[in-house]
Amino acid sequence: MALGSNPQVGQPASTSTATEVLGGLVERVTFHNEGNGFCVLRVKARGQRDLITVLGHAAMISAGEFVQARPQALEA
Image 1 (cartoon, rainbow, N blue to C red):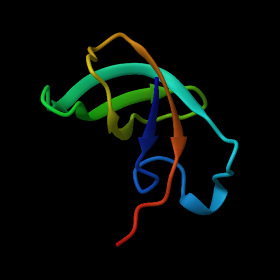
Image 2: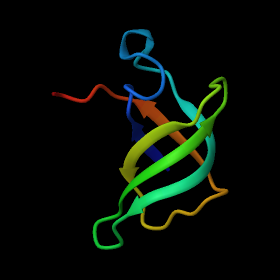
Image 3: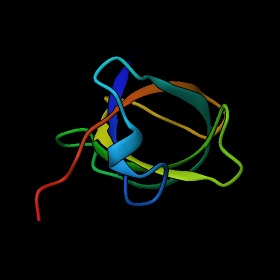
C-alpha cells in the first residue's frame, strides 16, 4: 500500500526526491473514512525521530501495520 505523506510535518519538501519512500509503523489512525478509504495516520518512520502525519487511502488500516509513503507537496 502506498500513501501520500504531509511534508510539512515530516521532512521539508525541498529534501524529498521523486524516488524517496518513507516506511514505518502506524502508531495511530487519527481518521479513517470507511466509505472512500481516506485516512490520516501518525507513523513512526525509519530515519525520523518524531511521528509523521501521513494522508492517503486504504480500504482497511489499523495501528501496528507497516506502510510505505512517497512524500508529495501539498498545494496551498
